[in-house]
Image (cartoon, rainbow over all chains, first blue to last red; front, side, top):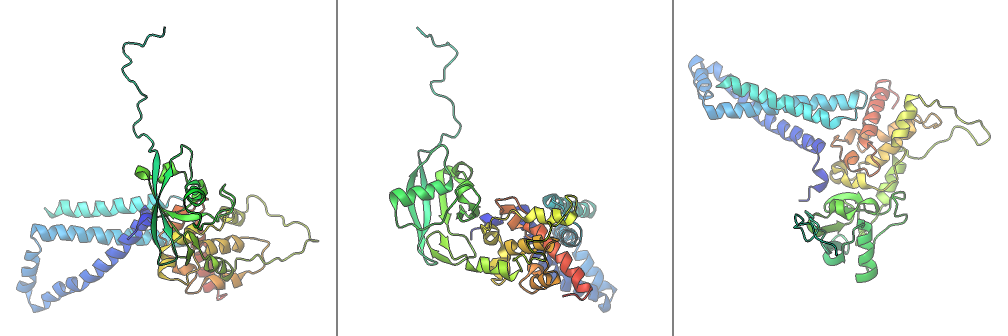
Length: 113
Length: 256
């Protein structure tokens, strides 16, 4: 596949927005499933929460936080692009949303350990 | 007799990347099911990609088909895919794109290939008409000039997009066109936006209806490949965003 015409920040921002959306949509049923464990009793839910304390799971959760932040900031960026007066610094907005998302992921990671 | 300075030990000027003597050029030959053919073209110091294609046709392979006219970036007819990226070839210097002396030249993407480097531009131009790209006059030549102050914001919007040369580089760079062949594309929507902002034009909300459909401005994913690659430095993304706002306002007022 030739990606020469796609190799620029705003295209990668588009790709990240799509991929994060799909991954978060796949994660959502798992999230609800874990919450639903509470209906089976305190011990079952606590078991699941204890399982999620493992370092690798925490790392994956940091990834999820990053994707969530990327999808959120990317969505705000698109809404601003479409509904606010045009700004020529679109790549700066992409960089800003990436910075915020990475920051959010790192903040979670720092607090997790 | 001239005496060499003892410290000067260089025999030749030091050049980090010496220019190769020949370019290895691959050019698309045939129609949609064609293939790349290799040519060796002498590398010149001041050489555009169009110069390379012209050399191949005049010296190596007279059967090669390609389009050009003005050679100075005004007519918009020489756009091709150069090393995977759509570009105007007449103003693309080889030194900017030929990494390691390699050039791959293909026809523009998203348009049917007629032969070699020529594509069928009919879809592209038909879509300009479908997007309401024709100016609809409200006055005649006997009327006075329209007086539009230079500070008028709508005039600024129109000015920003008016220099389009119709080269279809944006159309070839757009993934939405590739995924949704009916999509009007960046150039047509940019044209519509300049006319939406033209105080002399009389088409009004009808043009907004023309660009508000499934194939219109709302299909744009804001990937911004159009403005990334536009050789004139225009921003069709800005124009499409403007149309999206105008269409939204018109829809809220039930004018579509």
